[in-house]
Image (cartoon, rainbow, N blue to C red; front, top):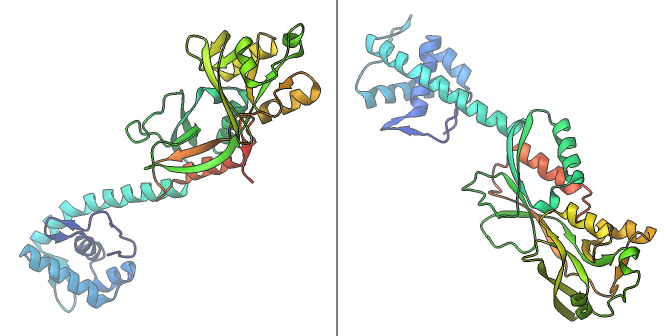
Length: 315
């Protein structure tokens, strides 16, 4: 039950005693009046009187001495009031803190993102968000390990590809399609690949390659090819992968919107133009749909509005 001004939905009973009845008694004792307490609580006087009487019957003591002129606490009532009033005030304060945290954009956000996002555009996005919401703090985990959101107390994760955990809530941020690209300097004196299989004969710059090898998956309509490629360098950091591709050390496999401008300017050449990676969806995932804190909702909204170089926004 909710009482105006006093609301403890998470703790209705304390032993055999209704916590709301205790709260009503405390309010009556503070005002030394049933009518004034009833007005403060937004309840009929008869209801307030009945609830206090019910509390007395449950406890087996008289808490209030009632006369036609005056309402006063008995000795037992005074002792009970002294024991109850401070804990009730603390519970009220605790609930107010929780409610305010839901309504105000403040507090700590624990966020995990893959290493591919660990570069200036994402740092600029986070910086702008923090400047717009100075009461929000961010604890950032940049890792390719899929951290357990509940066990690690993570508020939000950004994940690429298929989601394995069906218990989490996911919102699609966009999709990514990767192109096979190289610089004119790398291609100078080399025969460009005519089909996906030719990539195995070229140096490739690898993201998350093991022993400098990786499998690239390419599609062309209904055609599909999975090619084992290798190269002089592999990195967990997309920024370094792109840097070594631009320096002409090999062929890269880049998100389309990350390299479109460079292709148009002639700084990169798209190879196998009829082939690309399958669509890779990007999600923001979090623990629950209910009672999403405002700080998290604001970050989600900002993510969906952000023009990331690593994915294409959903239309």
